[in-house]
Length: 304
View 1 (cartoon, rainbow, N blue to C red):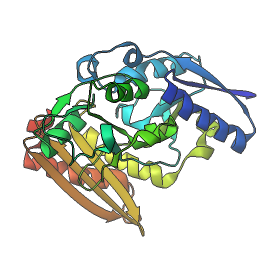
View 2: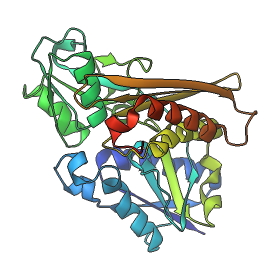
View 3: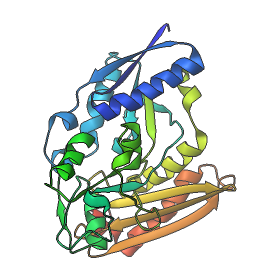
View 4: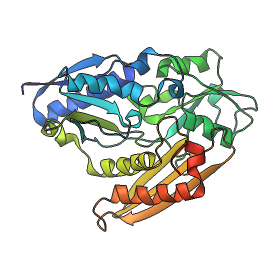
């Protein structure tokens, strides 16, 4: 293959992260790349994510283009990718993950604790909304959509006092200067796979991008996403998960929130990655089973 055609969403952020992938591929393989922008339902619609269908609204058009041969690989933000596999396609690479934390971007350098009662905080994520209501029930949570620039503009023009965004997205878009607080993962777990990219190809084409796969990042994000799958939960579920690997030990923590923030359930398990055949799946199964036994199904709509 003389040129690898890379499909991606056409947003500024998606193009920026795909350009990074393209440069890495060219550097490591010596093969020229071409970026193919693809319009998705999620980019065209201004409705709430939970209303228009969650994760699939960003991924479906990319996958259809890949299956149709309009491109050779596609780049997803892993947190936006449904957990269900698509016949004929496979995730061939998960590049090294970057910062998975959420951040606050607020007026006047405010933090989550110093925002005044009644402050208006915007986010389109049901998880983040539940977390905000749990941590600061005195705030007004506003459901918003739009790209990074349009969300930050709502703070600049005074429509909102703050927005919650992903650290990785702001860094990739060159807007990290807008961050006023990084939210710690121990008390604010983020979306499964946040901070990571997924490079998907047609079955048999894994060699095109396999050189970019980072095994620790794949294991950690697979563990987080397996929790989502085992709970039968999707993008609209208020669930956060965080996995780390330290000295051969995979530690997985997950938390499921009530949408109104009134309560949450949590589970943590650890195992050595060399002790089982599939450590990500095994750790996630233990966490999901414990969450379901606590009643997580009532919060997410998962099976009992």
